[in-house]
Every structure is written in structure tokens, then in C-alpha cells.
Length: 238
Ligand code: 5RP
Image (cartoon, rainbow, N blue to C red):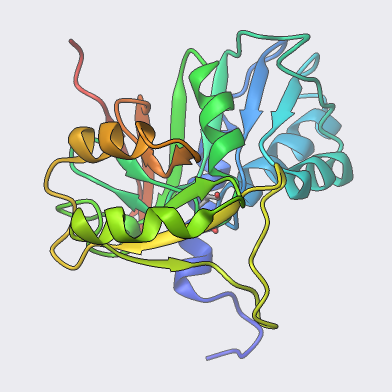
């Protein structure tokens, strides 16, 4: 195999991202997620703008990293203050359940991602097939964004809920700080998350918890790329 050739997973991420970029139409305001899969979508949106295939498109970035990427790709940016209703949001995920509920946040952008997703009429997630799970929590820890003050107070309650919480640290051992100045507690659930809605309610009831990586009922479609191409999974209608 050519050592410089992208890995199969990288090719799948690219295919999922590029397929979702084709959803962007002239004049749309689009939420731009964060991560290595949605990166391909943002690059492809930039190429479509440069080619003149679409125009008048504006993006709302979910992180400083995505702001920089969008600027480098020629995707004009706006804010939710100026465009509070988005036509579309494209983002990645760390886990996708059969009902399209998600775990997100390993890229530390979950709070802005949730705010931007909540503003969008249609939310599309791009993943490689390795992100599909039967039950949330079985592949990835659940990231929880907390204010730095007294972050330790969340650990015992998380253990009581069946979790194994760890403060996210960088290679030098310092706490990772999000774009909004928050810490991330990554909480493994060895048996997976049996009742995501109940867990979300319990966590959000705690003073100091700002957001969790549970995105429940916030996805209209998932573009899943694997060896056989890109499959689109739509949330069943009401
Ligand atoms: C960032 C996220 C990302 O969307 C998620 O981590 C997936 O990233 P990648 O496509 O790099 O696997 O939630 O906060």
C-alpha cells in the first residue's frame, strides 16, 4: 500500500463530508461543525463557492478552529446574532445511535455545536461507519462541559450515576479549556447509557454543568460513509 495514500477511514470521512456539502444551496446560512470529518464538508463548500456553483452562502462556525478553516477555504462567516435562523447545520459526531441520537464533544466544541445545531432547521451529521453504535456510551466517553470553579464536585455524582469521570488534560497534564473557557469531564459508562434523556436531565440539573455531549432528537439525517459508499439515514417523521 502507498504510505502516502489516505487510510480507508480518512477516505470515508472525505466522502461523507463531500456528499453533505452538496446540500448547500445559494443563499443558505449554514452551521459549520468542528472536527476531522466535517472539515471535508467545509473544504468542499469553499470549492463550490470558488467555482461559482453556489453564492451568497454564509457560515456560522462552532469553534475558533472552524472559524480559521472556513476563512482559509473562502467560506464567508456570520454570527447567530445576524442570522439567528440557519437553513442547515453540518457537523460530525463521536457516536450515532440507531435513532440518530448522538454523543459529541471529543473535539471540545460541544457547547457551541449545540447552540448552532439548535438554531438550524435541518441538522446533518457526517461520520464514517465506525461511529455507529447500538447504544450510546459504548464507544466513546460522554464529554461534559463544566465551569472550572469546583469542577471536582461533579465527580462523585457522576460515579453514582454509573460513570467513570476523568478531567480532560493535554499532553502536558494541564486541563483542556474550551473556546468558552470551560473544562471537559469525559465520563465513560462501562455498560453504555441506558436512559440518555434521564441522564441528560440529571446532569443539566447540576449547577456548574453547562452542556453535555448528548445530542438527543437534534439530527434530521446522518451521512454514513463505509466501504460501499455513502448511506443516508433519515430520522423517521413524527
Ligand atoms: C467536536 C465534535 C466532533 O464533531 C466529533 O468529535 C467528531 O469529530 P471527528 O469527525 O474528528 O471524529 O463533537 O466537539
